[in-house]
Length: 162
Ligand code: ADP
View 1 (cartoon, rainbow, N blue to C red):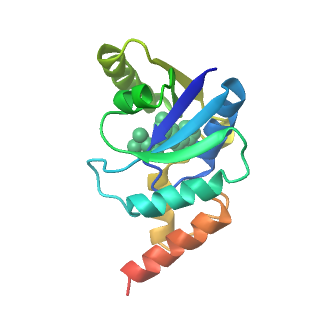
View 2 (view 1 turned 180 degrees about the vertical axis):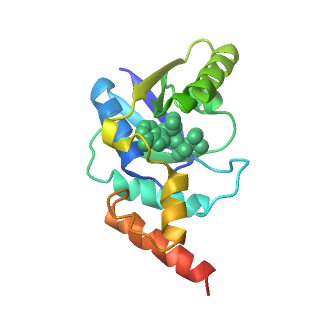
View 3 (view 1 turned 135 degrees about the vertical axis):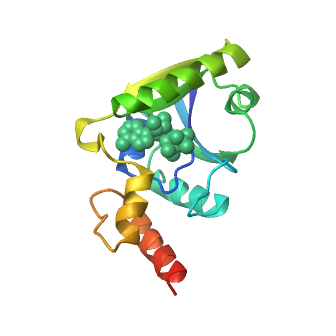
């Protein structure tokens, strides 16, 4: 049985993430979407909000589970007995970061393989940052995120702007 982990911040989750997770779930027996609890960056949503949003996004997917985690991703993989870490690659600029992270993780635990899936063409330029930028300026993000995320992002910006 091969268990894979797809780690990320998911602030918020969008169709690019969902596409990678569903494609990865076809390749492995079980996919754990792991929501990173406290990254060193400013986030729009709390860990609990992101966990709840990601859980809802995959509520109908049989072999996808959603959990949150803290600390090193390789340690989390070891703890849950996952052999593979899944990442998504969009534009060329992602490559350098992902390459560096994969080598670092391999140094920390050579037993965990990193599998990078290339984005589907229509999601090439989709990122959580883009979603937030557009939403914060009142633009339409309905083609980028599921409906419930659309509402959550709009609600958050209307709270911030009050
Ligand atoms: P992180 O903070 O770890 O980069 P993200 O939530 O931004 O977390 O992304 C998680 C993973 O999803 C990363 O591997 C990222 O490259 C990938 N990803 C993000 N957007 C897309 C997209 N549009 N298409 C494919 N992969 C993507």
